[in-house]
Image 1 (cartoon, rainbow, N blue to C red):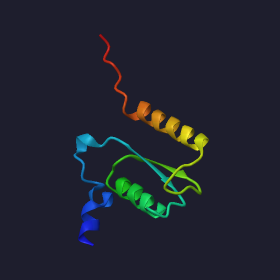
Image 2: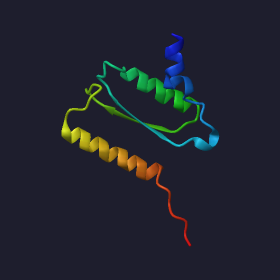
Image 3: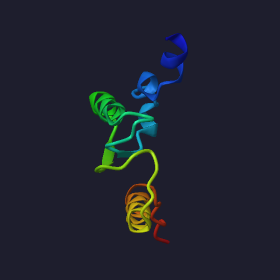
Image 4: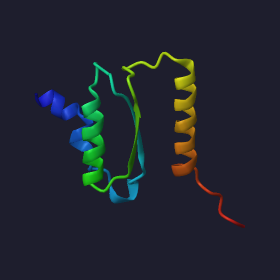
Length: 94
């Protein structure tokens, strides 16, 4: 059990320095039998409880893999929108 605790993202969910509270995008299939969807919900809750911003994209009925090309394409679009919205730095005016 100690190894699971030490390697779990839940253990460290609220430990980032205040200045590093960038948002996190969690993408998880609801039918994942490798990493259960409840783990994604626990992570989202742990981040919320610690004041860390997080978005959850639940892929209904999907497992650990995303086989459909249209779902992969839309997922990539969602990731890019997230990056552009939260991580892009606006150039400073001169």
